[in-house]
Image 1 (cartoon, rainbow, N blue to C red):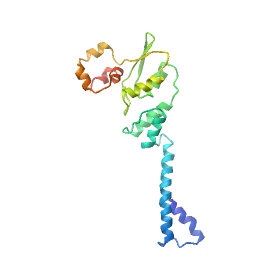
Image 2: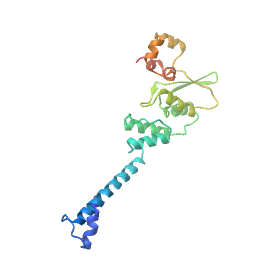
Image 3: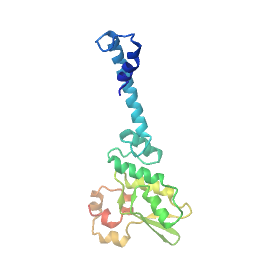
Image 4: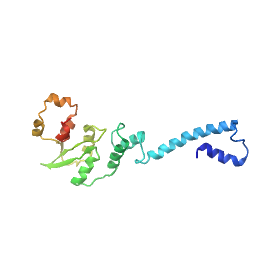
Length: 191
């Protein structure tokens, strides 16, 4: 029931007004109803924005900012919701699996960590839609153990050289050095 219908319902029993006959009171009530409709729509949007599962557009922008993600407005709402909810799943346990889950919540797809010589080496299969490798890596550095040096190592120098790409071909990929270093070879240099 609209606000206008509610107004008519409340006023009809009073029998003070000739309602529904195109009178000035009908015009005034219609104006009130239009104003109330705007407020009700804003309240509906605010209510749905409060729940990530129902949020869309600008509301998702706010949720992304609240969990430290960059604005990913061009990405499907469901994909945006999934990463927001994943970030809210923390804090993650201080285990290998927990650390990999924390990295996943930063937009790193299928993260794998390896500990070698007291340092963590991180590689990923890809980056979440709407994010750059630099953005995801910056978030990742905030969740990784502070007491260990961390390096992006998606591929070794031998793998890098084995890709048989010239520097000009690598530059033509228009990918950041972070992405080239972080993303495993099957994704980093193929396209």
